[in-house]
Image (cartoon, rainbow, N blue to C red; front, side, top):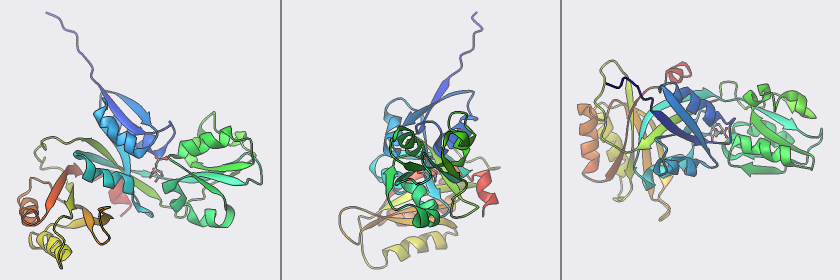
Length: 290
Ligand SMILES: O=C(O)C(=O)C[C@]1(C(=O)O)C=C[C@@H](O)C=C1
């Protein structure tokens, strides 16, 4: 009899190159597996689509405490079947590094710009938008012109990118001290596991707007209220078809298998299509920043 044991390596896709906050979230999530590989993708959309190309899990940002929802991620929920299986909240702090004391342009990721808007408004007029924070740093390192980059503070402790490599460093330019981003781990949609009674769950759905009429949003909210389901977030996203038409991304307390949740969603399903995105435990670091 052969006693060999096999270790399965879980492939986790996230936004790269290495050094992003997304990588921190993916590494945190990877602790749940005996063996895992973190694979990097250049955009959030390609990170999610990696689920069709061999990755079992994609870890992406979904909400920043200041900037709100990360729209490219939420919009993907309507386009392809996905399931949220976990969330993790990661503290986010930025610094600015320069290759010259008077830079002409600054490279910065699109979400990061909103989290450092006060410093940028006073110091940077020519901002070049990048797909990730590490791409901002890579563009600075490749630039022959006086330039700067908004980078994750944790990259300054990296041997190859430490403070000594730059003409000037401005530490911590983040608008708020308690800046934090919530990341979700996604997998391809599949049957939901039963709830574990010791876990506090939240769930997410998208209500697809294909039955617009006066009072529609009120009816959705009433369904949750009547069945005592506590809403945690509600974001409207344009359908892209017509002005005035919106899908609603909603997170609420409870598991999709709980009877009150099923009753609320059944009422909504009489009028609209509902995409169920799964049930997952509250992030532990989430409760500390409430
Ligand atoms: O570029 C990164 O470092 C990322 O991980 C992406 C991202 C995001 O898009 O929200 C993650 C955390 C911060 O909110 C800023 C950027």
